[in-house]
Amino acid sequence: MQRKKLWGVVSTTVVLTLTLASCSVGSTDTAGSTGTTDFVNVSLTTEADSFFDSAVVHSIEIDVDSDEVLAMVETYLDSGDKEWLEATVVIDGTTYEQVGIKLKGNSSLRGVTADTPIEELPWRIRLDKYVDGQSIEGVTDVVVRSNNTETSLNEAVALETLSAAGLASEESVATRFSVNGSEETLLLTVAVPNQSWIERNYEAGLLPSDDGILWKAESEGDYSWLGDDPELYTDVFDREAGDDDYEPLVDFLDVVNNTTDEEFVDQLSDVLDVESFARYLAVEDLIDNFDDIDGPGNNSYLYYDPDSGLMSVLAWDHNLAFGTVNEAGGATAGGAAPEGELPEGERPGGAAEGAAPGGLPAEGGGDAAGGGQSQQGNNILTTRFTETPEFAAMYEDALDELQEEIFESGQFASIVESRSETLADEAADLIDGAVLESETEAILAYSSGEVQETTAGQGGAQEGTRPGGR
Image (cartoon, rainbow, N blue to C red; front, top):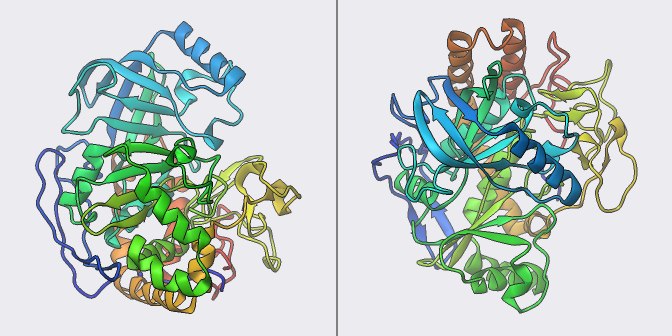
């Protein structure tokens, strides 16, 4: 069975307001014996005056030694190592001293040279790197992403849609960003999953506990079986929070990789929250996120809940959501389509299905349409899950529920319009109005299940088809 694009969430609507300092507790009923979760429609939203208040365009200014930045970039170019630097950072007018900053990302750093302007580099900012306990409203770690669209609206909407679907997500805000007095640019600031992030999502009802283990799947790895020794997985899954115990991860991967089809059906729900995973797959398809768990970046986190003994797959990195495709001339929102009909087997933007964004090299080689390369290959968990009738039915049910509750209800359109209006009201000097309108329309087209070509050439699928072509 192939994953496909339809449209999404559940029948009960509960809106929870989350502040980053103190949180209102939502609830989810988790049945650990069956590996399923009864989802309610919760939202990771923030109150006014919070740093993650998405109704405001925030500001981040970095003051850092330029020579140290140059040396850091050269080290990265020579070895791939990303060194921490110490900087002064001003966030919404408040100054934070001795803040740790370093380069972030993998594909976002392709093309970076020693001559790349400092303000154009993608940054990770960690407030407590050198000063214990330093945070903004409990938040210690964020990334300021380089744009894949001019507004970054696609990623902001994708993240909010995930939380609306009852899944753990990262808060994000539009940001006026500058380094060493440079001109401001419009970028997206996104929370990094760590212990405080776990606690915020738990309080919002999006995670089952706040005392579990969080791992980040590294881009050079996957969900393959490497053996019984937990040490074999430390380079593939980076522990971000919780106990230094890889045994639950080994047990999970053992079931994913080493079971017969019958055993897979019987045992997967003992190690994975299968309902949550079905919804994760459905949301990623609904928002047409090319670079998800199956993408070349292997973008995901794993969260282990010690109470139920279950893993949850958590989404990460949505700069290619809504058909956005990295191309030689830059990224396009909605997947810029060639004139005429979309060739069979191609994804919006001229990239063949399975092509890696931006021509990233991938295992298997082979040129793909649009100048890309073939993708690394499907994640084994996704492949086995969607090829198993019992679990495939969960995925189909999740698609139907999400279509009705988020897209047909108008909730999705409300998210898009709210984010777009904030940019129009507070960042008109940073983004051209026509570009904002075009990118907004390209994303809104997903609410009807039809992605049509806009004046900017965005929106790849033909009228009447689902975006993404899967």
